Length: 297
Picture 1 (cartoon, rainbow, N blue to C red):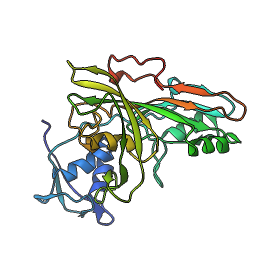
Picture 2: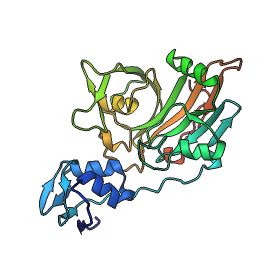
Picture 3: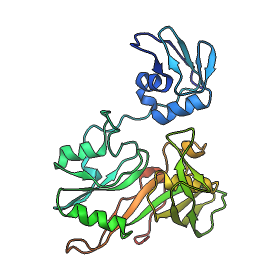
Picture 4: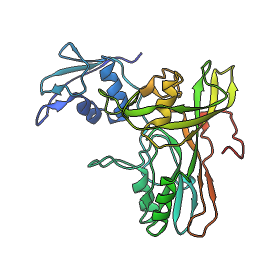
């Protein structure tokens, strides 16, 4: 185990939230890891355990972090040509790598897919997003009628998405099924969603177990979201007691290096005189030996 990190706070212009101080001082840890450290009571200030991310830190405070997370690789600074899946006069289709934001958070200058794609392809619009730690197919559009046509297709449920996830064995998943559970923001964790009986937003996910590797204790699951709620697939699987491997936010304690969730396929209906199209992002190396079938939808 790594030695605890200890330091004395100085050079603050005003009292600062604990989570912000740690993120600014140790950007390689990542926002999620910092939140988990604090909530797990791994941070002490002046020899007292603190578990509130909003705790105000002052100059002169002595901080000790007792569990040091592994550094996250720095996000890319340029668009990599191997990300490009397809492009035409209307669309740029990209295989987003895990660890890269889809777009920069408000008022923050952070490496993100939209800005990197704009530097490479010119004026493009990020049409939908993936979580930072999810890889796979992302659509960017060029200005023009395609945006209205595509928005209508999404609203009418004509765009189909297929995700791949790896979960642990044994579990309670049936060979195929549907998860219907309403979601809303967690009352104490703004970065999390939670299942509720009433209120929240309607969320539905179909799934199919594609393959299993009992020796490795893993199972490959295909996920077909009918709705597009924040963290929907992650929360729905965790709700069944089967969190996605690498999803520490929703309960997986495995040693997976990343969230094993990948946006594998996206199907577009005929739009603006063009035929139906399918875009596929091959499974990343972290998914191991599984080879996907040509047709999964």
